[in-house]
Image 1 (cartoon, rainbow, N blue to C red):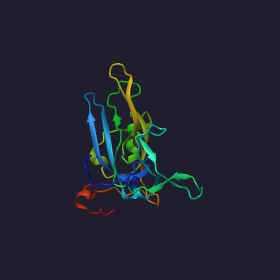
Image 2 (image 1 turned 120 degrees about the vertical axis):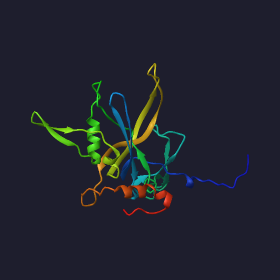
Image 3 (image 1 turned 90 degrees about the vertical axis):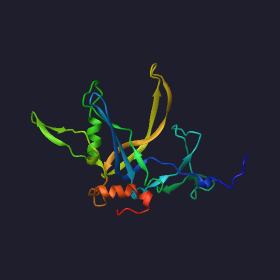
Image 4 (image 1 turned 180 degrees about the vertical axis):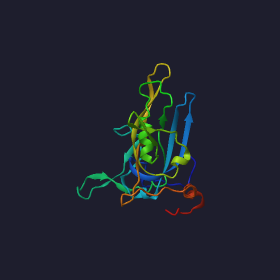
Length: 224
């Protein structure tokens, strides 16, 4: 074994991203359109400094998966209310602020070939983040006129991101048998981010968003 000057203790273990609700701003939009006109949209949200105000349970990486199949272990501390027992440590979510969260995609079906291919999730999710669609009347019934979003429609929008765990599976292309599975922390839903008075937070301008995304490079604090 070669010598090193590095030391390590359990106190240095990095706390992991956790489930919960965190405020942020939409920072990126990626999409892929297919020959049939169907398109999938992936939204990225950078969590705001306000995310650090949340109190969350502390977890660290563990090769032994927990009961939910997640590779993590709780950080335990002595419980002052129950001598001789331990409880999970709660911390401020400082490690969540500044994190970039990518969702697992939202489909827009221009040409639905299967019964389950509907634009319900697209309409609900885009409305939740603040996209405004047109409305028309068909046979006296109001109908939302959906459109395919572009970056300028969503970048800088303030949102509350709900993170949670979802099981994923990889199947054999021929037999369709599950060959690999696991748990992934992903976006379960979006909500509008309101201030303490219940009013929507202001959307970031293009300049504000660019400055904030470059914050790590120039070391400056954004003006919001």
